Amino acid sequence: MKKLLFLIWIQLFWMTGFSQSLPNIHIQRTNLVVRWKAPKHPWPKVVGIYHVVPTTFSPTVISNLMVLGSFTEKDKRDYGDVVIFGKPYSTPHLRISFVDGEIEYDGDRPHYSETNLAKDVPERKQLFHLTTNFLPELGISLSEIARQKNGKPQINYDASMSGFPAGGTNGDFIFLERGISFSRDLNGGSFFSDGGCYIDFGEHGKIFNIALSWPSLKCDELYSAATPEQIIQRIRDGKALQRHLI
Image 1 (spheres, helix red, strand yellow):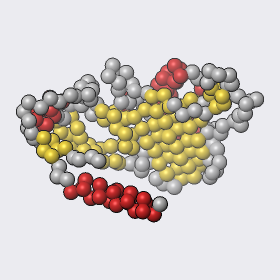
Image 2 (cartoon, one colour):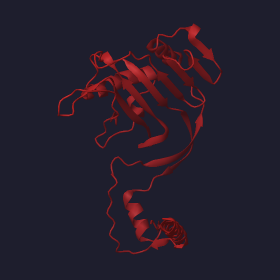
Image 3 (tube, helix red, strand yellow):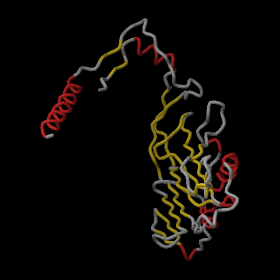
Image 4 (cartoon, one colour):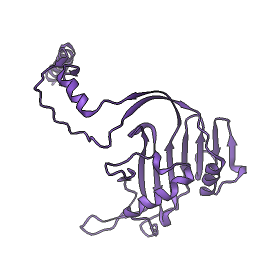
């Protein structure tokens, strides 16, 4: 057994060292066939360099969130860059970070069981409408949401399950809540890092959870984005680098 482990270790060490010693390959063939699978539309016309600046959440947005958790000014703790409502490690709880542009809300969920199920949990087909109706409460417009190929806002269904099996053999599931997620549009593309939102809807469409990262961004420079045709030509001109993967 010790000999086997030793041989495996030697093999892994050799493969790691060998892969690091292999030279990278510059691709240079004018007749190279390139199969482009990335979508060409929508394709950003420009790309930019941005930096994060402190976010100013309007008093209206903060008031909307206070109503969501039934908070009052007595529940508020102001730390300057961060405002917190509610008691630590309890629900409902709301945290607003101005420096990071973040909103974290955890609502007070009822105690459910197999004999006390959530009522009127929104169906999957209702989530888009519920989300677009709620966006103004967060101070977000539809134009800020990343788009699908057809131009419609890309609002994704969160497949994580919260509920109980319905019984039987068909795998039905009784949901206690359903969630969505969406990312931010930036120059026509999805902005994933520090630019997304998750919302969970429970019974009667009530919101139980919000995790929003939506910082204010200041653009330093804008550049023209290369088109798919230009990228393919650069590959043929030897300006692409193929790294070894083992």
